[in-house]
Length: 115
Image (cartoon, rainbow, N blue to C red):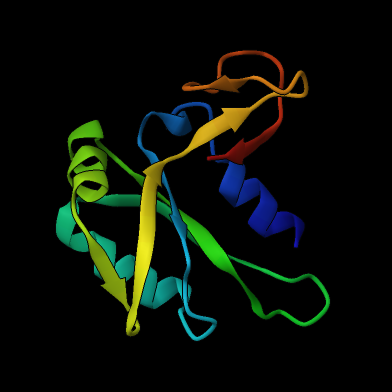
C-alpha cells in the first residue's frame, strides 16, 4: 500500500542513517514480531513488513528504523533468527532515480531503499 511505501521510505529526520533492511523474513512474520525482535537493540521509530498489494501477503522483507545509530549498528552486527528463520540485516541504502546508492536522504534525488 502507499502507506507502507511511505513508511519504508521514512522521514528525512531519520533517513537511512538509522534504518536497516531485514530480508529472508518468513511469510508469517508480522510488524509486531519484527518490532519485538529488534526492540532488544534500542528504541524503534518505525517498523514495516512489506506486503503484496493485492493479497496482503508478506514480500519477505521489511525495514526497521531505530532512534539512534548505536542501536542500528548493534542490530547490524548481530545475527538474527525470527519466526524460525535466519534473516539478513543490513544498513538500508537509498537508491536515487539516477541509480546511485546514498547513505542519507538529503540527496535530493528521491528514490527507494535498496541493499
